[in-house]
Image 1 (cartoon, one colour):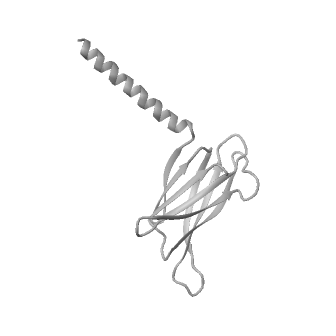
Image 2: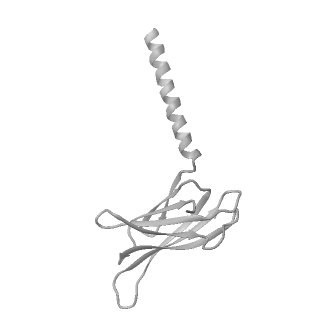
Image 3: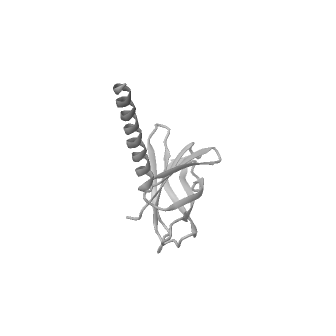
Length: 144
């Protein structure tokens, strides 16, 4: 009988510790969601900021006379916080060999985004390709 209580108490303690760790994960502002655009799966992560990515439009900018071009991402970000904020938007794409190539930019380019407002930012990933990749990541970070 005592052994059953001990096991039950231990299981309850483990459950409480696990739930506490999960709540801390979201308390520090880490959050994720998945968007779909054309044939791409876009994983969006928010790290320590109050924001929402409303849409991501991937496209290739090809220079005249070339087959390959850089992957660009038009990211629409909204300030969901109560104070003006600026963000670093980092976009990256998975290469055929499994690596990741990306680039980042500050949003908005000047100043801060007012609460409830949104802006579109163009991220150059520096990933050269002929077609939009299937795996894309976007991270919204606090400014440096």
